[in-house]
Figure 1 (cartoon, rainbow, N blue to C red):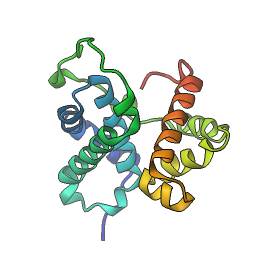
Figure 2: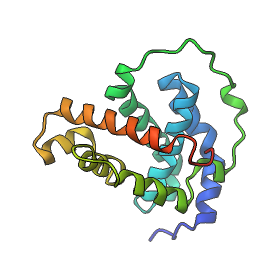
Figure 3: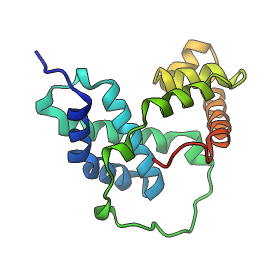
Figure 4: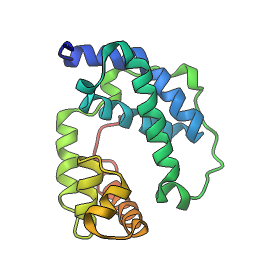
Length: 174
């Protein structure tokens, strides 16, 4: 039987593996800021599913989540439709020093984001709830809603833009 993971134990996991997870994400997406976002998403997903992991396999499990998050990002409509920036990466991959509090969202921030998701209008509300809160893939959402995959991807892209606009400057830096 697995031991129960406390917040303190999970924070220790984040501290121990944050550089590994970031490096995996960065190696795939080659964008410093997006790698930061994907690192955060990786740890949020890991936190939500930590009971599914044997502690002995924690490192490869986290690396697999990071790889999948990065691959999903690279396959996303958002990535394919954004112009590449010529700005320099900015920071060295190895020199990242962030605390677990900087990486994971607080409960208040999570609730705030949930509330903002629920303010979206259709057709963006259903796809956003399924994607962000229920962690379903665009393929799964398309099947469940009976919509073409491209339509779902476009709706997710537009929902992300709307959420970014709503949240810009309102959340603490993470």
